Length: 69
Image (cartoon, rainbow, N blue to C red; front, side, top):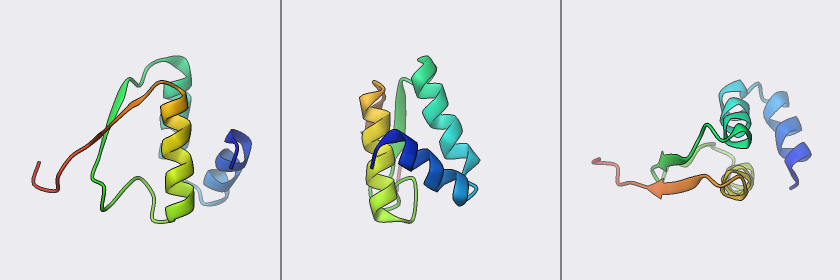
């Protein structure tokens, strides 16, 4: 998925918070993001992986934490 496809899918699902994360990353406001691997950002596995890849491309460091943290 490219950026436009990801944004379109997020808009269709009304996931404004995730779109804001992407916009913040593009502007350089988001440097790192903590994620629990078993949860991820989104329930849809393909969209989750595409969104995380897009954030990484924008220079965001993804930090995987345990559920206990």
